[in-house]
Structure formats: C-alpha cells, structure tokens
Amino acid sequence: MELRIISPPLGFFYFSPRGGFFLAMIPAACYSVFMKSLKDILSQFGYITSPQAEELAEHFPCMKVVIQWGGLPRERVMVSEVAKRIKHVEDNDIDYCRSVFITAEQSRKLKEVFAIAD
Image (tube, rainbow, N blue to C red; front, side):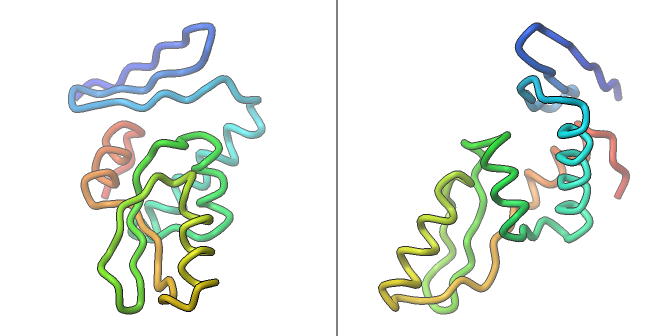
C-alpha cells in the first residue's frame, strides 16, 4: 500500500488507493494540533468531544458525523452543523445528546490515509 502526499499551492491532499483527504494550507503549529486531534479521535474509537468537533468543522466542514440522541434515532449531519443541531434539540426539550462520533468506515479511511495502525 502506498501513501502519497501532494502539495499544491492551496493545501495538502493525502491519498491512498482507497481514498483521500484535502487539508487547506494551515500553519505548521496548527497542523500538528489538528493531527493530534485526529489521532485523539481515532484513539477514542471515533467519539468526538465539543472542542474536537469545532476543530473538525474548521478543517472538514462537510464531513458527516453521527449524533446519538437519548431517545431519538441516530442522525447523520455535517460536522459544521452539529453544534446548532444539538442546541436546537436540547433547547426545545426534544431530547438530549448522548454522543457524537464518526462512522467505522470513516475511521478506517482516516487510519489508512494517515498510516495509523489499529
């Protein structure tokens, strides 16, 4: 399996034979913090904390995550909409949020693209 990194003027695109991720140009210090957050999410079996969700929304706004509610069915939403959706549901006393996480498929792809072993 080959992991290649292409560095165009607008950012970095990491890809493997099964898929890839584009990261916009960000300062090196921010990049290391972001990579640590991705590593932490993967080490938490895909579960995302509020600060991590904000960081994901900044770098991957269209990434879909799953919100697990107390009683409602699970819901897939873009990470950029998670905070608004949770606030709306909880403010209207509809339900409460139990957890937010990435899917197993997304977790596998991130591990593959960033060469992280299980």
